[in-house]
Length: 259
Image (cartoon, rainbow, N blue to C red; front, side):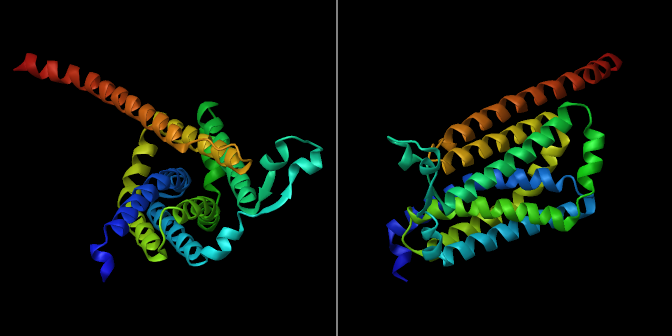
């Protein structure tokens, strides 16, 4: 029970908790976009199962931390195939983790572009019909694949921030519990406002690009992406508030005149 009075353990736990919440934002957005295509009565179940699967994946990866760290070892060197020299051999050294990040990033790019195209090109009705043909199981599988990518990135980052697996698992569990209480509100807000949906898809597009860049050793700080996206959503929220007040204003004036 010495950990209760150990400030270093509490500091690492709080740091990990904040990191898991921040890194979980992209997971929540992706789950929201996919589950909003399902029938209303199945959306809530899909979101809970998606987050539950994400929790299981992260815990299993943490318990297999020795194996996970082997994924960072180079498998092959792309520079050898391309006949490049200089600094390229080191920068094009591809590991198992890199392959997973690249494939996950490409999948995110594909899903984001398809969704954005359907929303902006005026064929959203056709798009909805096609996407809704996806079964509940197919939706959960897609969520699970991205959970694996996000979970792997999260776990490898967590390893460098804490020495105890129990602390990592506790941070993951608490962050997932917090996500369960927020995912429905976030999903509803995204579905209600088309402009927010486009911003959310743009966020996933940027996350996909950052995953690919990280896979080829050209890391893009996610802090810049989160800040830009947060600022954009804040501005859009102000616009939504402004429009809602303008719609309410004529009603208010009419009431004042009648009075």
